[in-house]
Length: 166
Image 1 (cartoon, rainbow, N blue to C red):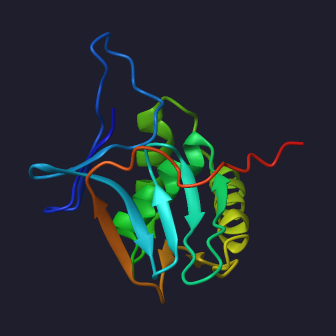
Image 2 (image 1 turned 180 degrees about the horizontal axis):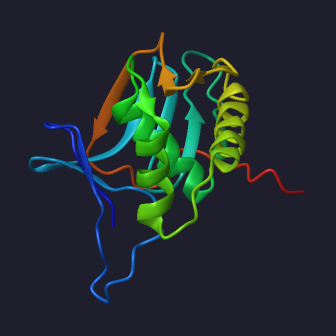
Image 3 (image 1 turned 135 degrees about the horizontal axis):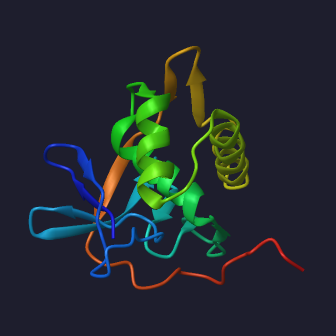
């Protein structure tokens, strides 16, 4: 299990009782309250536990659009929402945290593919297709959005999940 500390903004690799690294998406703790997701702006909810992105709607249109992320996509997005909101997260730190701590082989081309996948899925919800952008020779950054941690449990997505499969 992954653990995030929002107070110190420190990520620590968690281990299962059998010693294997858990491939599940990050779980976050802030003192006594679990952070179960993020609100991006006022309209996109990132549900970390269920690996779901959801566009929240207001007013008459009660339909919400939902997209599922893969485990690595969610680890990358959650890490960047915590560490790259207005700052640059270095490539080395991202690759170590998102890939190595999950027992995966890191590479820059993989990071680029996963980042493109996350940006593509976020753009389906109305966010910029450059939500996560690169800073040449440094790392990745998220700018121009208000990111709010969501405390408490998000039990399930608010609407059926679009898996992208027919």
